[in-house]
Image (cartoon, rainbow, N blue to C red; front, side):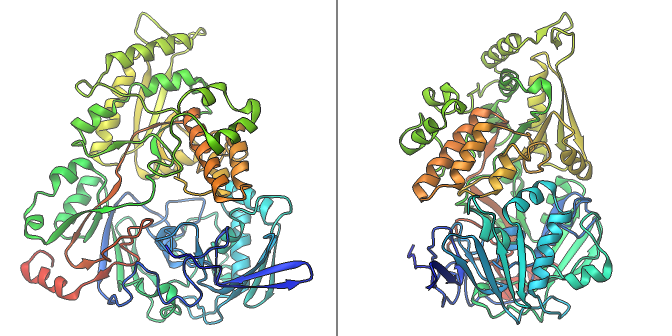
Length: 618
């Protein structure tokens, strides 16, 4: 990768150096110069046209993706843009580099060398889909609305870091940052605020406290075309989109329309895809990937089944423990429950051996902790004194247990689990149920989304069966997506199948996911983890001055999170499994940080007509 300097100039203003640039990265280097014509991974000559249709399972009752109530329709955030541009559903743009941000609604930004403030100079030509200009007033309004009515964990964190926003004129806005806090994530934070129409909100009286189908116009390349609640959402290209000719958008946003079809369960969605009711599918069910595509359409080439590289770390999904539950605060209990999960049997018997077992929050990246801490990571941990448990320095990083592939219930692991439960004070009674000294049963609820793939459901049922054999009462509560979302927000569970976010760099988002201050209510921290050690490591990461220091701190964070044991890590797929009707094309090389099917893939009209002529599609 060829690195360019900030494509900026610096000037002396008294004793202050001001940096002006077309983009931003914390360390001051950008891959793309100010005069770039398009991102390297796109096809700049990609044709515009056609429709891509996706399927999803579940329900929705709102088109407002930022509301605290209701369940938003798929891709409803994609109609909005920000000062520093993103892709669909906040995917990385550009997708071939990490933690670099480029102007979209802004032409350039300025900030002082100490990053105490930032000024964005906006593009006067930017327009909402209703034709009204996107101004600095809209950006300030959107920022403040998120603070006043958005998620509490977000608002509390941002208020402490960004005390003031100032509209300098209609197209110039300045954000001030709190003295003495880390400068990480501040500029990209304010640069990523979605632009909503202040005029629309004032005229409608809408708020973030309500779910609604009518929403603020966006400034993005797509607009909402039609909504059929719980059945279908269609987005169409805005023919008057203001940013069509920007280098940022060259070779992107290529489809005339994006359609999302809703289904009641995973099997109905799969059969609908094979029937041609939608045309692109990301597969997450190993059984279907291994056996379900043995169909005439795949054999004839009408449907392409492809395994494409994924350069990002896998999502840290798994069975998350609610640490707010008294019976789960003892690590020995959590370890015993985890020993009931048999990855080897599950992968071989249910998943056709297609998955790998996940151990890390930064799996298969240079930030993944391995072995004993050493070098800069060890120095950081030693500097934190008594916050670091002795065994973190003397024992190798926690890795998942191994199990007998031949038997679902591994008796060796079961004996270890039972000993841990005995040690923790949960003795087995005459009825085979474990109770503590007060006679209370060890009873657990496991919250699970009923719309999940059958293979995942089967794996969790087998896990629950094994847990019961340890003398624990546990119920797998399968609830519909709406109930799942509601109960997840209320943290109404003992165990939940959920996920955290992987990380490749530091930022204040780590505090919302893993920090103590928001632990009681953060939706991004389903375990409710509150660890002084994790807080200290995140603080060190936020204050790192070099990439080497940052990497060492994130490796230490991975080690500490695995030591805290807040979830049972399950499996991961190191690539994208996709199936699609052979009328879409993509660049030969997929960039590492996005699959990009809604971003930089395109439609081939000749292939589409051939599919219709063959009867594969109507």
